[in-house]
Length: 230
Image (tube, rainbow, N blue to C red; front, top):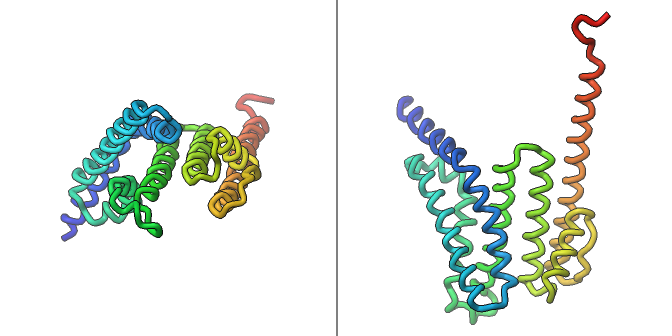
């Protein structure tokens, strides 16, 4: 029994090691995917929209294939699914856009849910991609903040809170950085405003802590006596 448990744990570890080896290429794809979703949202030419839609699904199939490959390396163990259940949700939500036959239902528009789900999924994947690619905490924080602002602007525009994407991007970015900026008084923008304001406080607290620790280390290193100094 102990041997089987050790073997399963080794397979899970191997799956995680395999995932880490794909961090950089999948991270780059994750960031590119966020811009592909944005292109689908703002593009007006039918040919361009179709091309971006196809490209988006190609990217998504790559993400699904990568996830299934990691599951295969882990031998589809229950522990693997428990660790990664949230990824399954974000991989499945965009497929709701295929259920166009249910668009007529007023209370449950799966197509719209799928569209918004794709934006949220792309944003989450974008933040994970930033974490994979950035080694510096400050660089990671800047990259994640940019992704949050970009994803929030797409949500504001997709829900119809703003007629112009440039206005949605400006106010989402301003709110993400300063905590104040969204002028729409509708329900969803207000909820998003509170969320982004909370995020901005957390960002500045983290940034202040990181800079404080950096300067503190510099002060400590200068105060240490040098070897051979009299």
